[in-house]
Amino acid sequence: MKTETILPTRNTDWGFFGTITHHGDPLEAWPLAMARIGRATGCPHDAVRDFLDSRYGRHFADDVANGLARKLTIESAIDAAVERWMGWTITRRTSRETGIPSGLPYLTGFVTHCEIEAEAFG
Image (tube, rainbow, N blue to C red; front, side, top):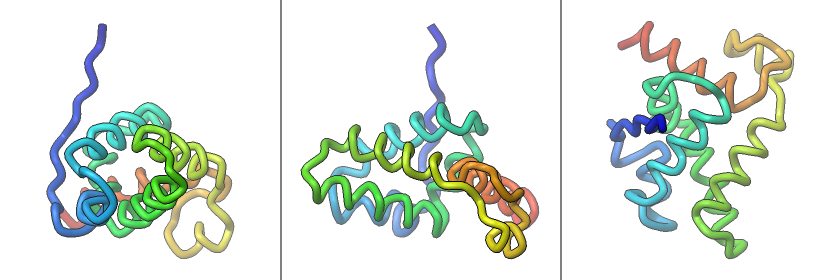
């Protein structure tokens, strides 16, 4: 059985971790988000962490928090956010602004975008 790698956050104050702190236990939410985003996107662990630590990770946490406000469990709220973000696609406008290919699932696009930014800007 393959175990999933859960990398720790590098941004405890902001991003997903810092935002979800205001709505629940980040130590419970972080590994769930890492695993579910990794499975959905097929992106490397480092890329998922870069995404969750970014401003886009904060927006993802806001979406999870909306699910928690609707009385979903943390697992269900993360799953719903992943499903929603994978259902959206990158528009031509977003593609022009970010360089992410148009039509790519939103979550995959932004995880990859964060990976590229982390490599380029260290």
